[in-house]
Image 1 (cartoon, rainbow, N blue to C red):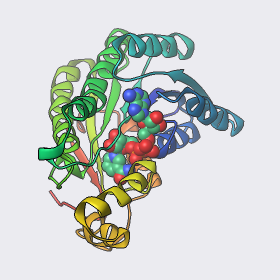
Image 2: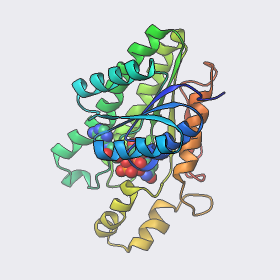
Image 3: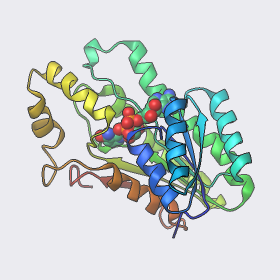
Length: 260
Ligand code: NAD
């Protein structure tokens, strides 16, 4: 069970959870493709990995653009020799109550999280199926793939949707030895979370400390944030697991917030 030599595409890997997954995969000997909207950030992350002795390349990719996704995945496959792992991770957050949520934000959120997951999956499956050496698709869900919170309708909707896509890909991919699984993190201190703390404080009329303690970490077993390293280790485990015994499943990494 290892990611050694596996060509691994991580979307949204210029920052946060995706970047740490890229670091952990490179440490494990994978050839890492850092695909991000932010090309400067992707190139900086790829350079960091190469400077540390890893193999990594950056590709500019808006996951909502079919053209950019296909071009980026094909470029990665031709430079690194196929595609073995997709970590569909790119994502954003937007805080608003349903009665005030702008339709444009609803569409943007669903496009990044769901269209992005579909387009990158389709582009990678083409290579995985034709190569005949199996593969692993990992979706970045959330505890919000399992339960709801106020102010996060499109995020919760999209993260629930990823569970459905994951299960279908697990069933369709099985005959090609392509597995699909969902990682469901609790709150992790990344730019995505740091941005929403003051926004939630404003909308809920409470302090930022109360948002952290009474909203984000309230239902954990120990009041602790999940870390980027926690999530990255789960991704390495799922990517390196070689058989269909582990497919179509969710791995909740959340300090006990939501137990299935
Ligand atoms: P982050 O803001 O640190 O990183 C997100 C990355 O995605 C950025 O590099 C950004 O440039 C990239 N990105 C955004 N839109 C994109 C697009 N259209 N195309 C390509 N790249 C794009 O956020 P993060 O916290 O690391 O989040 C990563 C994933 O983890 C997201 O899917 C998020 O929903 C999920 N998640 C995060 C948490 C958390 O608490 N941070 C918890 C559960 C799930």
